[in-house]
Image (cartoon, rainbow, N blue to C red):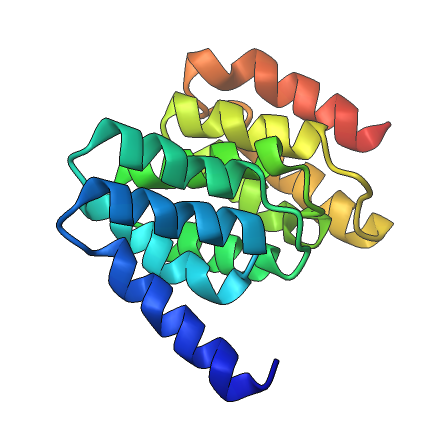
Length: 172
């Protein structure tokens, strides 16, 4: 299939995502899920932010939970960094440990999320780190361990044991 045909198909799917009929929307979500097309994640995320239909939201989020293409990690990570809405940010971090893609190149992001976000996001960030397929080189890990240790005395009490566990995990 030539690029123009793919682009036309993508445009049709995007238009269907924002259709007034929920069945048309759900069919478009299903096409994205089946295709694994990373280019359609941005409009899908916009749909998640806008929809008031629980079924549309659930099916759309399932696409992020089931991502298989490693090139989707860049989009997910950039979306987490840019997101101001706590519930959407939490959903995206949750998607990271659900989809089991390799986020090891972004260890620093998940450490920062652990340290700076609410407990629920911190716990999800911890889970992403705990389930990382591999880790970056030792120098990067050491920097992150030092960052964690420097916050040990000031971190909120609900995260203290997780911080100790996270340091142990990274040191091991």
